[in-house]
Image (cartoon, rainbow over all chains, first blue to last red; front, top):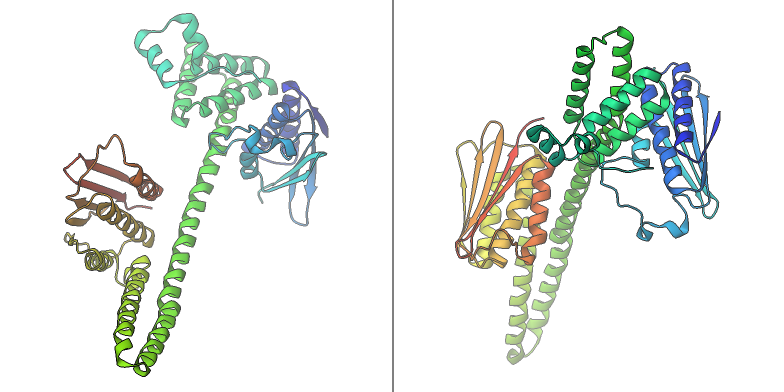
Length: 130
Length: 327
């Protein structure tokens, strides 16, 4: 499942698909809400900061559990863009733990891969509680 | 993404006291927007409506709205639904789902705060163990090295002609002084007495050392019951606070005497440091004090305590830290 994120409407689509998939994988409604929240924050980041982004959703398995993985990829100036270092005008944030740090805390696994000039890929996984 | 001010204490107060200018209040208050979007969600059940609710609550939170205020607003919506006799199971379920969505940013923030508190505790522990290590190195290794130098100097002094000897004696005296200061410093930095005997003996030890070093009497009073042990984090924090306050009193306030008082209640520990120095205008903290006081405040806040600073020019300063004991 893949959603191209250019606008607030795409953000809504990504959330809806994430919630749906989480439900199908057996997550509870409140866990599915947290998955939707994580997607919303990732998509929000793309709408605000990146020129183009896409979010892919997929089911994952290991030997004993199932989960959902969100892969958020943006192109061009992502969070790692060299010209977009914090001193170049990133909001310092109100320290409320929203945005990417919030996503990390809502999910079980979180990874950021940057390729300067080519964009950023964020991979986040939430496992279903046993 | 459009941004409008959704919520402010001033706006909601104005609304509740004056009844509110209808148009402006309608746009300005979170409650109305919440109700509006909830209506939309109950009508269409769409992800777009949920997303609007989420963004509304997210921004309200950024603007300072608390979780209880949001709960109140949600409750008002529920009452409104009941007044309209819209109480079918389906609607109530959807209303709950909408509320959960709006709570989600608060959940994220809550997890962040918990993580932050854990990190702060850990950082403090690391800092303390580093201090312990440095104190240990100073005490054991540096002191030993100095002692060897001392012995070597004495050796050389014995071999030089008598007229040069007095100059060596002077060096010896200075070396003895450096050794004593190093010993005192390393003890004060991380006194083993704090770990082994507790806060009150550690404060007494600190007071003695400071008095010896500066010539300013430091009087420690422990009320009944202050001989029991407190959690390590509280003992360390209070020790550091007193250390900093003493430093301020002597270095910046030109105190002639300092009094330290410790009092334990079943649920609260209070420690005050009072001096008869020059005091200052509490509204304008002198720059020299700023950093130290900030450090004291942070330590107190990290433990959920409060800090009182009573001072006026020429009338000395009292700093009182109160730390609650609990889970």
